[in-house]
Picture (tube, rainbow, N blue to C red):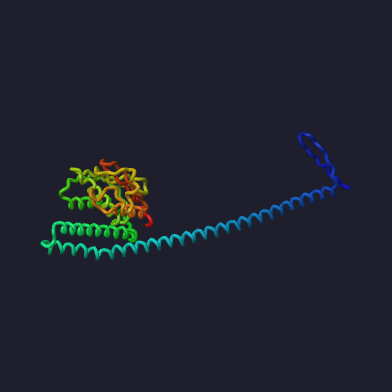
Length: 312
């Protein structure tokens, strides 16, 4: 029988192994069988893991789909609820205007047509009624404006903020010719947004600055901007007016939230809420800093010129 000699060297030692052809063939077959069995086992394991991974991925996809569906349903429900609430607020506020006009109108008629039949106290009561009706009417108008800001479709465009802020200030200045108003208008970077809505932001903030500097002999107002990267700009309106306590800064932008009494400064407490709603719809934020009797600064951010933002 033919034999083959195998020389093996391990750890520096050399050994010789003589195998017949038949045994060598059996050894090769055995080794191949073992390798094949190992390959089959590994293939089965790999296939099983692939199935488990596929099943896990399918379950994850199903969970994601269910989550997206639930989020979409809740979002739609929230949008519907907001629309119903806004519609209700609009309807109620609109329906209140007619009886208020009647109250104010008839009170004025009594004061004008029957002065001899009314003593001084009665006339004072009627004046209070007229004043209350006017304040209520202003509050309703502000509520309607606040409601419209949530329902209004946005028409974004690039805005020349220099021109817009200056035109708003000049308009407000002409409405108060008796006041000494100084406005320092720093260069303002262009913004991207709905021009009419951003104009309302300037109107509300500059009106507040003029109002709360009322006790000052000279109202000092500064308008400026600091680019906040390529996508966003930060604008501010600073005044030397009554200011406020920073402890209550969080209440400034809530509806009907006021830090000063109506006897000190007139207002309905809706203007800053409108500012916040408009700025948030543009993807920005608004905040304020102030000190009592040392003025206040209101900041807000907007997308930079050419930067598109999806309205909320």
